[in-house]
Length: 240
Length: 240
Image (cartoon, rainbow over all chains, first blue to last red; front, side, top):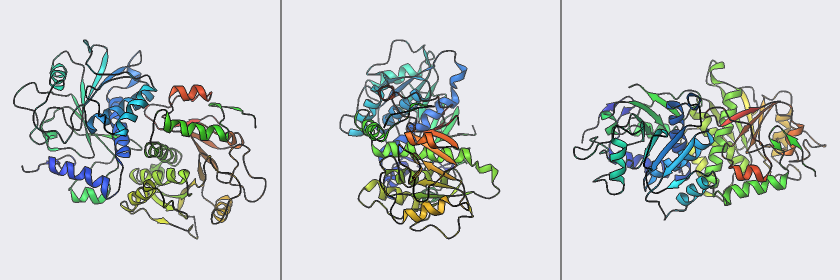
């Protein structure tokens, strides 16, 4: 599939998104722990920018739905930072990664903050000011399986609080965008990590960029032109 | 030695500072990569708060002097974030940690940004708006050995740019404060990480706190009362 230009230079196709991620871990030698920490922090900062704590009378509640892979890990990290930012975080994590120590640790870190980590979406989503969709990321392809199909259906319904998707709206094709069959999530907010992927061309809403750690060699190689992040911010809003 | 009250509750003695750090890595299961990433980010945010980039006509230069241990690692991470914040970072790292992969990676990450990492302090420090002292941390005890003795002497002289010390002003006793013999570094700025240590009672200058990740159980155990961090900030200034 041909690549397209976006606000940040070339929009990444799936192959390049995977290669760029791999390259961050080999040439600059970032560990997954480091990258996930910074990515999750970016996600929490985007939530706090879009849903400022001071706008709510009580501690605002955020629901984070975390998938089985690294996108879910970004959500687990974001939940921790949201707690420290003064939000009530509630994590849904139906298919925990039980193979890697990092994921076990991220869960323990949430337990220590008494952030609930549960398997099923609550019956009502009314109490949440926002839902973070950290279900599937740039490696996703194929069909959405249970229980995520039902979850995505619920988050796609008109009764759902605003959804902020992490990197890829879950269920979307990384390149072609929303699915042509079945429920299509239409998040009101998106945070692209490191750089927007091709599917972002189909997104209409508030668009953030996070992952302020891409070295110039990688920007050049993937023909990215990232906007300047303001001050010490871990997140920048892109023109819509 | 008896403990004292500070702006953040009890000031940590050396034994407790070491135990708290160990506890962060065991009970919430933080990895060194995660903690160092967040600590180094806090340090970079403190530098950017005290020396705002927009106050300088050209890209401001920051010198980071990194010691052989984890305090030095915080400095390496801070240098990377300062680069991304629009500063020119210059790292002095005379005794690199060659045993641990993380430290090799942190150096590679700086190389990818063309941030110079050198062994000796430059002849003149005039071009730097600030120096980050990331030489020794809360594990330090005893005498300062070469080449850090000379470096500390240079940073203690009246010709040095303002110094921001990371966690402990280097050469200070973690509990008793400045050394009674030899050159005593008197940094104008200090960033305490997780919570201030006892020596901070002897510090007069701008005092920041970073490391926004301490869970409530640990706060309680060590009788800490940390101030509220503003917004999504990774750093908070303490009353002086």
